[in-house]
Image (tube, rainbow, N blue to C red; front, side, top):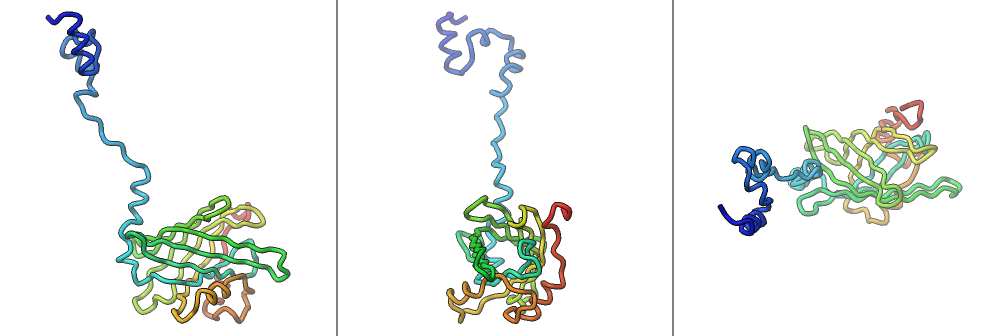
Length: 224
C-alpha cells in the first residue's frame, strides 16, 4: 500500500482524490464513468444551417449577375417596388447584395435599405435568406421556381418579409426577378429602382400583370 503522501501524488496526477483511490473497483468506475467513456464532441448548432449554403456556386453559376426584383408591400398599397440585387460567388457560397430605394412623389418619404444574404438550391427550388445590413436587421426569405434552361432571364416565386409601415407585420408577395443586361451601367440600374404604380408603363406588362394579379398576404394584424 502506497503511503498517504504517495496516494495524494498519484491522485493529483490522474485528477482524482486519494480517498477515491481507496474505493472498490466497481464503485470507482461508477463515480468516474466519464473518465472511462470519452465524451462526444460538441456540435455547433449553426453547422447544419450554414452547411445548406456551402458549395452552391457551381450549381448556381448560371444565375450569377444583376437583377431587378419586383414585388409588392403593404407599406405601399396598390404600388410595385423595384429593387436591385447582385448574386455573386464568394468562397463557394453564392452571396447576395441588394439595394432598395423608395421615394414618394412629394419627396416626404425616403427609404434606402441595403441587404445581404445567401442562396441555396434545394428540391428544384432556389432559396434566398437575407438580412437588412443596418437598422433592426430584419430577415426576409425568397423562394424562386427553378426555370427552364432557356428562361434564366426571368425568375418567379414568392417573397416573405416584414412591412415597415404602418406596423412591423409579416407579409408575403409574388416576386419576379429580371436579369439586367450587361449593357446597362450600374448607375442606370440603380436609377431604375423605386416605387411605381401598378399601371405604370415603366414596368413591363408581363411583370406588371403577374404582380398585380397575385395577392399580397398579411401585412396587418387581422391578416396574420
